[in-house]
Image (cartoon, rainbow over all chains, first blue to last red; front, top):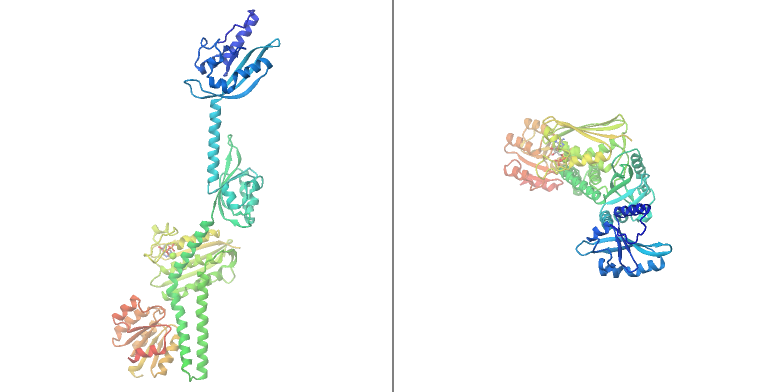
Length: 492
Length: 122
Ligand SMILES: Nc1ncnc2c1ncn2[C@@H]1O[C@H](COP(=O)(O)OP(=O)(O)O)[C@@H](O)[C@H]1O
Ligand SMILES: [Mg+2]
């Protein structure tokens, strides 16, 4: 409720304006004070009174310093500013004021002081105060949340980045900078695909095209380029970023550096390979020491001297043949045992690969009284793949078959091509696999072998190697019926 | 028929191994007979008597130790020796076979001529 000391005219028209003015004054969510030259309060609206827990009688006619705490008056220099308003018709706009009235929590206001002039003379100063405590608090909260989110993204070990729908980089966190060596500045606005390794760029572009076609989250393994010309393997999850209308506004990518995992996988492969070598060791020893024994005997015959020249020649020939045989075995072994540091994909003939692999276990099979039956196709079966890995996969299948026939049996190896696929079938007449084990045999560490005789890694490694080659591996077996493992791989 | 006391049976699926053993023994005056499988060896056993046998550990149709047991059943007095690249001296199965009297000893491949002759002549 205002005070009306200054309103003289009581004409109906001015009464009408007065009423409108009062209504406006009461309705606006701001505090409004009218102050005269002596810094006395002439009018105060309801908002002011409520906010400051005052009544009209203890406000109207009182000086400013009786209503506001001295500290505010001094800090804001109200008297000075109001004087300027009166003297220079000066307006103070949009200043911030922190106000603590006794007994009420801290409030923050934006205030303006406006001159009210009538016929060229400033009669009153109008102090307008907007309570922005909530807004300030909210925006501070927003900033705090923003800072928190930013620091979550920034301190993540994983790469977190975002792009627009076309795939241009918008943000790129510290992990991305560290791993790639490219700063946000260097990548912002560029196509994300440009920072993927050359042979992976197509894949990346396909992923963006999928998003444009409305696809949801996608996963991929795409290598990231590094500034020093290298590349890092990264496993990505790409998700559409939705705006408040549910429209896809961009793409968020979270990527994990796979370098360590790759190293670990390579180690695991090597460990399993060594375990497989252990299984073969007996056969290998036997197979190498036989030719050695022949060589040694023939050499002793020659050393004893006094030989018929024909027999002496025979001895030399036996020595030569024995050495060749032993070194062949060692050569094959080395090739199998050596870790494939950077397995490279090349075109290879599956028949040759299987022949070589089978030759490594022939000794073991013979020792275990296993009859080998191989059906080699006449034409080469060309696929593209990593030789060392495929050999390891087939070796595991062959060794498993041999292990399943401790009392001898038959081991069949057949391969061929059909419907754009190469197939390899490895079958045995061994103990077979019980139905309840069938579901588990491809799991890592699942083994029915006694302690020390199986790691349970063979088939899980087979599975992952064949999967890496976009192939499949299936098994048919029943307890006591032998087992047949079939591997299918895409033809070249 | 040869004289029973110095005929020696050589069983190894590797012809060159038989060749070497035959030469060593024949030169020393022993008469030898070779078999490339356990089956062949048992057939020969049925036809004649041997003073001694040299057995390979892994034959295509049977383990050497198993053949040793079968021979021992038929000829309790025969000297049976295992010549092998598969086993090593301390192998449990070898120790056991020696303890049970199935074989007299194990000779590892490769071997010296003297080792072969020594076990015959002590
Ligand atoms: N050819 C087979 N015949 C019977 N069982 C098999 C065959 N191949 C695999 N298995 C079963 O699958 C299990 C897991 O095989 P694998 O992963 O190679 O481990 P491991 O050979 O070390 O036991 C084996 O323990 C065995 O029970
Ligand atoms: Mg296995």
